[in-house]
Image 1 (cartoon, one colour):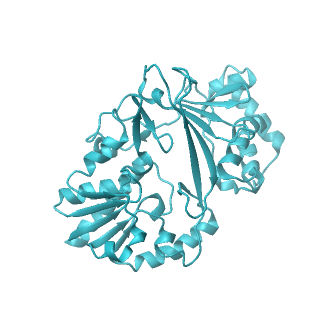
Image 2 (cartoon, rainbow, N blue to C red):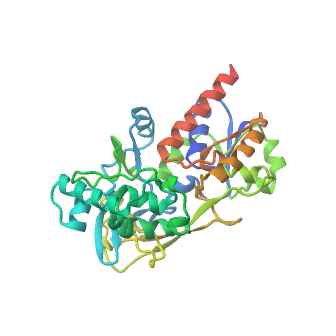
Image 3 (cartoon, rainbow, N blue to C red):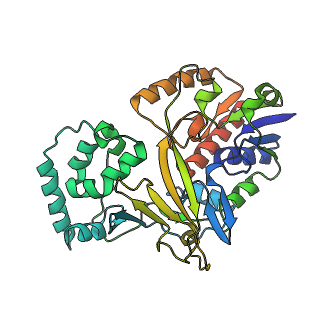
Length: 368
């Protein structure tokens, strides 16, 4: 009936389905959620575009990818300037001269470098064996204690001393007064939200929502010549080698009685005693002047079966387990695995689009 069954109506699946439909292929797209868009889904509430699954800022250095996504939406000039809150102190992220001035009162880059170098020497760590030692060896104790330790331990659910050093192989340190979180040339938020982008991509496809692939796998497999699967690769193979590890997120959406709750789209809470890692105020993504506001508190948690997986935990143990599943996947000639969960790899949106286009290219080559 169809050339491709696309399991998952997120960005990877939508790009793949769009490209294949353009090439005359028939695509059926299914998703277990009640909406398209996956984790980039935005919902309009009280005139505000709400990022239901956390902040998504599109950014890339790749002109080809930027031009591609701009076919589906106009982007505003939003620049991601994150504020970090430690107790009652506010700092700019990533670490830059504004951060160092607030921490130590330094004015010049030379003064900031001297302060960081003194703290690095004081730590005296030559070969870091864990994340804490790695951070101390890179930026010293003040930055680590106020801006890294608590946030990281909440994010990963483990003490920093128990986390591997490779998680922060490097830390972005800028000796300029520049609060732009990303270095990428292109950056912005789509006017109208991300859901409209995915809607345009899926035009011409049949889309079925609240459709769980695993509830009737044989039926769905029989409906198409090939399957693009963007769910968890270990679940596809019935966890035969065991569970891969993921981190999940819980979101609490609130409507405070004010028109401006925090004055910034993203504020990170870096002390451990605050259970959430950040608060998102959605109207600021689009310079909104509504008389109300909506905020989202983001709580990281350990993933368990039945919960939504967000981040693969790409340590050595999990990567080795993924490679075992990858060998099984390579033998499934009629199944393609894509996206963060199917490829067990953290990817930003521009990476997802690029990988989906590569996947389409391979499919067309095989069809020749």
